[in-house]
Image 1 (cartoon, rainbow, N blue to C red):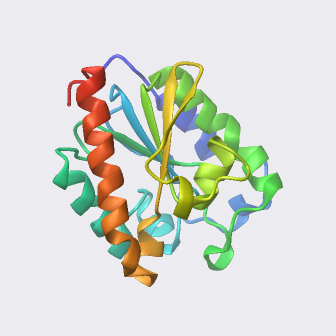
Image 2: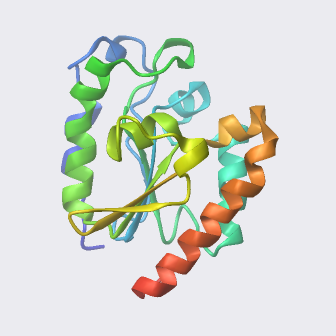
Image 3: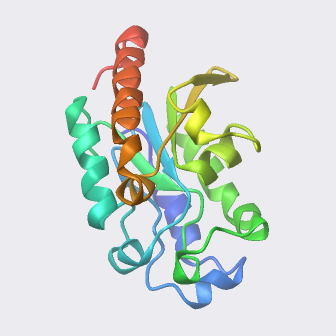
Length: 189
């Protein structure tokens, strides 16, 4: 592997920039292939993620894995998955702006090291943080936005799909668009 995220991970694991460090079990830095050209970014760890130290586990993670596998992607082989926040907000509440501000430099460093060609924002908060503050996932999902040569796409969060299954088909369409874009750009997966 050419991209070494371990120095950033080490700093992140001792972070005390916001109060979330006081209640975390594990820092959820990210998982996958750091040399991947496709990066998935969620908003924050939930309870299962905090306990395991890995993003998108539990029922939501299983659903995400189904979508990934449906288009030839795998969290351990050809993508990387991270979150905006590396520590769990209490009771899985939405991240506060000051928590995002404190944690975003770690994600930016992950971007800098990895230089992904495509970033998939998983859920409303990730898309509002990384694409546009007025991003509406139900209206703008599956659309690619070019930001300085990196393509960003927002899609539904798997936890939202479990609560509201009517969007599952729309989400899979987003993954098919992603698959087409991967082919178009000649990204090897």
